[in-house]
Amino acid sequence: MKPEMIVFMGGQGSGKGTFANLLLQKHDFNYVEAGAILRAMPSDSEIKQKISRGELVGDNDLFPIIAPHITSDHNIIMDGFPRTIGQAKWLIENYADKFNIHVVFLNISEATMLAHIQNRIKEGGNRADDTDENAVRKRIESFKTTTMPAIEWLSKNKDIEFLDIKLPGDDIDINFALIYNKLYK
Ligand code: ADP
Image (cartoon, rainbow, N blue to C red; front, side, top):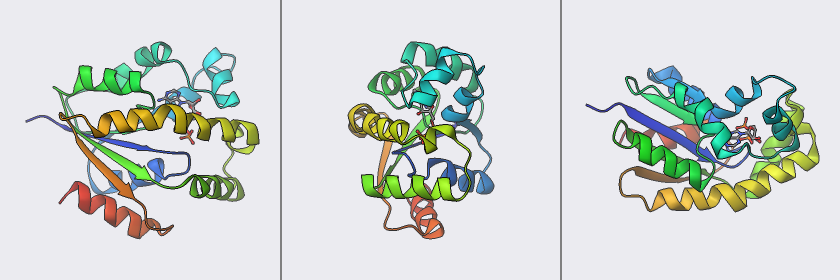
């Protein structure tokens, strides 16, 4: 039997990391958090400079960094990857035969994204790319122009399950219950 791959997709502040961690408390998964893997790169690297400017790391730089984290002997949660059509195609081409892939699109408005990032700052998150207003704006813009087309492409792919989950409000437990029930129906 193929292992499961749960792919959380959504804009900034949509709760990918929060819901991934809640799911990890319930079931045994490997956890691949693209942003954290990239932030751990050397601080003088070009990748770190891109992150601080709020720009996406290029697909061809990213694939060799992400691939070793995707081991196909275990269930896995992907958080923050894929974010481009190129990444989405790469994932399907290389892994749809190895995993049952479920994409969970956390569908929230741009206003909610901004509000959630403001909260993250107030709660003392120490991410430099969150406090730089220009970087935040750029990340939301690249979500709309680059990641939304990848989400739309995946929504039409017949080899995977695609769940479009409109989060009804800000209650984390209610939102998680909704996600969980759709995944484990
Ligand atoms: P957020 O979802 O709030 O943008 P992340 O921690 O997921 O935060 O990502 C931080 C930064 O890491 C992104 O702004 C981008 O520069 C880089 N990054 C993360 N995932 C990817 C990806 N799949 N492709 C390209 N760049 C990425």
